[in-house]
Image (tube, rainbow, N blue to C red; front, side, top):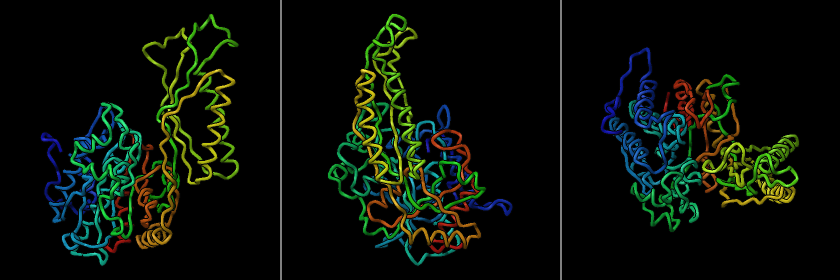
Length: 434
C-alpha cells in the first residue's frame, strides 16, 4: 500500500465468534486495497503500474504475516505457498489477477487472489498440509482496457505473448506494454523471446475463482457455480468509418457520405446477425464499447467526416466466431459501397474459446456438494486468465461467485459470504477442511 495507507491486516486477524475470521480477513483486504486504488469513481489498478505493484506487495505482506512463503516469478507475479510446498516439483495453482479496468469494481480478479490466499491461511491455521502441493498466484495485466491485448500477464507467464501484443501502446501515455513490463521489473528479454516464465509442466491444475460478471447467479438465488467453459473473442480497439464532411442543411441525402449513418447501418445489420445466430441455437455476444467523432471539429451543424468505434465479439464456438468474422468482412464492403464510405480496421486481437477440464469440473462439483451447496454449472461469458492456462493444455477449472451490479464498473457488489462459499469449493477440491 502507499505510505499513507495503514494496513489493517499486517498482523493475523482473530475475529469474534459472531464474525468468522475469514469474513473479517477478506473484508479487511478488500478495504485496504480499495482505498489505495480508489479513483474518482470505483477503483483503478492499471496493468503494470505502481498501484498494481503496491497491491501485490501488500498481499505478500499479508501472506507472510500468516507464516506463508512468498516469491516473485520473472513476470513479477506473486507466488504464495505453504512452507512445506515451497520447493514442490508439481502443484495445483490457484489464482487470478489484481489489475482492474479504469474506474472499475474492487472485486473483479482480486476476489480470486484473496480466495486462494484464504485457502492457504485456512490450511496454516488448521495445521493441514494438503497431500497435493498447492500454490497461489497473483497475476498482473489481465484486463485489455489498458493496452488492448487481454491476459498479458498469463500469456507472458506461459510464453504466449506475441510481438504485436508486446508492442501495443498504453491508452494514456503511449508507451508499449513491454516498456511498462520493464518498469516494474519483468524479465522482458524472456517475454520478447516468448520463453515461459515458469515451467507449465509443473502445474497439475489451474483453479480460478472469479465474480460472475452477469446476472445468472443473482437470478438463480445461488452463491456460487462451477464453470464449464470460457468464451473466446475477436476484437478491434478502433474501426474508423471515413466519409466526407459537409453542411448539415446544404447537402441533400443523395449526395452525403455520412460515416455516422454508415456505422449505424452496419451495427443495425450486426444486431440482426446476432439475433439470427441466437435463433439457430448459437452462442454470440457483441459489444460496441466506444463511439467517437473528433471533438475538435465536430459540431451540431456539420456532417462528420470520420467516426471511430470499437468492436468486441465473443462466443464459445470457434465456428461462430469465424462465421461472424466472415460476415463482418462482407458487411463492411456492402455498407461501404452503399453509403459511399470507407472502413479502416486496426489489427485484430483474438483469444480462442476454452473448455474447463471435465475431470476438474466434476471434482469442483463434488466439492460444492460436500460443502452443502446446490451443484450448479454454467459457462463464462467473460474472458479470464483461466482460458490461457486451458488452451496451453493445463487442466483448468473455475468457480464463479454471485455479484450484484454487473462488472467492469464501480457498482460491483459481492457479498463476502458468497466469496467464502466459493472458497469452500476450492478448499474442498484441494483437501483443506472448512
